[in-house]
Length: 231
Image 1 (cartoon, rainbow, N blue to C red):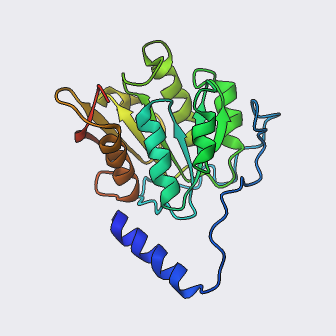
Image 2 (spheres, rainbow, N blue to C red):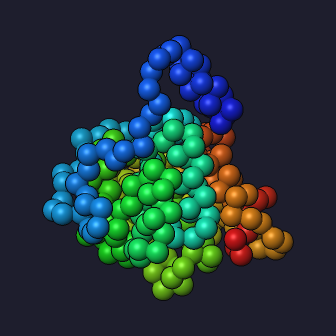
């Protein structure tokens, strides 16, 4: 399903609901508090182990529950695009610098250290009906990636597999495919940053979202025409 098709369907549905209120940007019930880490640890969702093969997955953002991980401009732009398309977005942050901006877009801040497996497990298990993850932690543009990005990716992938999320889109090096191959049934797309030439955060974010909403590149490492390691 293409992004245009998804948005067309969403528009048609809204058009038939005359008089219906606009979708609220208030926060859904979660196990998180707005000011800190998840309190306690919820059980993993019941979808665990439901697939023995990896189906293709085109995620329509409208009303989907999606986790965005990263503190770069690219990650923030992904959140904006997904919110504009009607998704419920949880944005994983270690610092507080972007909280106001993220909440201003109607997204939910999840404060956790990606390098801490216990915090990632608690954070992701606390998202009801999590369908997809989009992460920029594999990119050298991501703050702190040189010291913690790889471990953060490992933790996110492992937790996503445990929850049987439908799709994981990663901005990062192709070598990260080894993290995904460990887990049977986890659908993924890895977008490799371009090595040369400028690319804006908007261009890179659009590439990631396009990989999410289509299934043409599922299970592949894709050299990006838009993503750049300097984004």
